[in-house]
Image 1 (cartoon, rainbow, N blue to C red):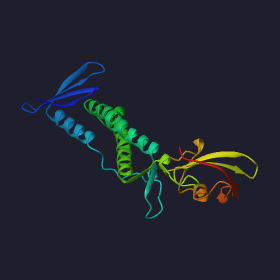
Image 2 (cartoon, rainbow, N blue to C red; image 1 turned 120 degrees about the horizontal axis):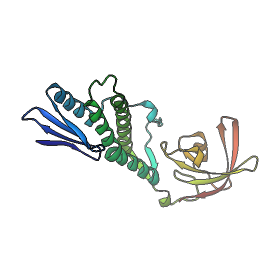
Image 3 (tube, one colour; image 1 turned 180 degrees about the horizontal axis):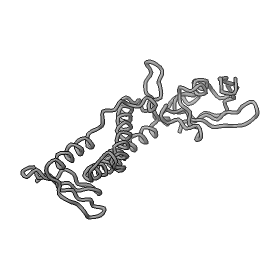
Image 4 (cartoon, rainbow, N blue to C red; image 1 turned 30 degrees about the horizontal axis):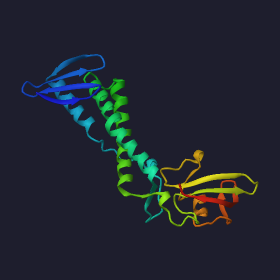
Length: 224
């Protein structure tokens, strides 16, 4: 007897000596015994579900970096990616594997909505896991608070600017996977960030925006 899966959703025991598998759905406390071809199919499905799928990575997940540049990311951004990876590996993926395994034991998979959706979701999760692992492996983590030259704008800086209409805005220069315009987080490879880099308080920078050429006055530079 081998316990091959035991998580909050599914409990699976393999009896190789008799060619059978017992599957118990912990949510309903219901289960059954699979034998013969049904047990063989279930083993294949479970093995397939528990291994990272081999689909090609989705290019949309990977914002392009300038050739030869490092993958810079702030400490907070690094921790967020790491937390997301941990959530996917420890919680979401095991839950989906359980659903796929359970659905596969219910018969015809061609019309099995739980199985079809579960496999699709598993591929999405696996693509994201591979993406996050690659990003974390190559990351150059920058702690803004450790910046010594605080008089100029560098990666991680929080910059207060004023436009030609007198409207003030605050931006932080962050990594490509941290950018969130709604929160004032701009990628260091964006036109605005490139214009701000190395500027000092009192400087005026110019950059090409979708609405045309803009000028911004630098009011404050902080690292926090």
